[in-house]
Image (cartoon, rainbow, N blue to C red; front, side, top):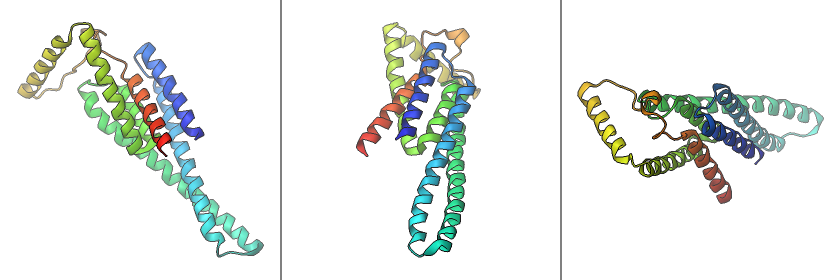
Length: 209
């Protein structure tokens, strides 16, 4: 569908931006969220208008009935758009709330959390969640490969063990990753992984439909 290609292009822009600058601008996130809410609302409106129109048309006849049908369809379509749009926005809010738990430990970046929210707003929890999971798996493989190639895998595991030990002992939440302290040798552009994983899932679901 056309909206899928639009979203794939958006994800490609986010991936390119994150890969080049290691950040995703807030403006790009807001644009994606607004587009997702609008598009999901339109899908809900088209579905409701089509289904309700078929059901009502079966019991109405003549010009007067046609006018009544048009009014009913319009009201139903507007309500369906509002409901679907609010549902998409609600999914984004839930995704941000969940992602902030990881961001609080600085395991992922704020831009990655916001991109995940845009993904579930567009695709829903099932398909969007599958895309995010695929992206996280891709990121884990990329990160391990990067650490192994730079021969700092054991160093990072030792740091992780010390981080967990300190947290359990003190209960204080500190940033796991600090760019000024740790540099870029262990970091990957996770937004690229989320975008690629989501596109792969979209192709898989689309081909399986």
